[in-house]
Length: 100
Image (tube, rainbow, N blue to C red; front, side, top):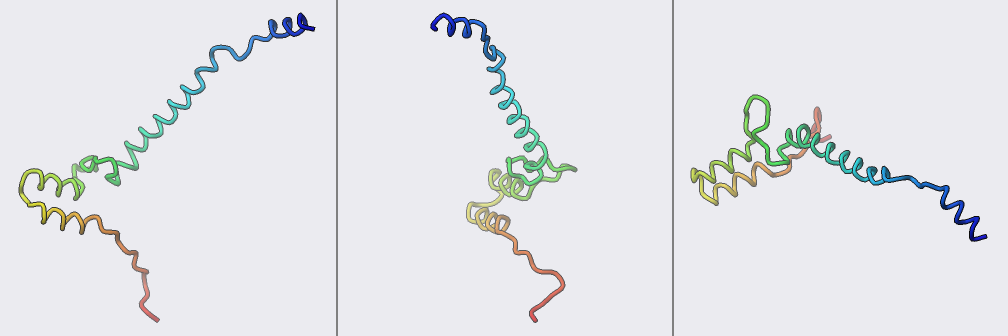
């Protein structure tokens, strides 16, 4: 019985060393997706800190505000007040209707 099992195991070669490449392929896919998102969607929203990447060279308002604060054009109190205004959530007002 032992010799029969040993013969079966000797004939089985397994998946081979290529199985180690599967995690590398998934890592490459994740890296490519993140790179694609950084270059497109996140850059448009300014979520990656690349506010100056907008078409036409227009800077994101928060980037301009941060630059002005860093250069000393505005003080900390004015910076905080303007940043609060720029980052406050906007309310979606329903169109075409008032109170009934």
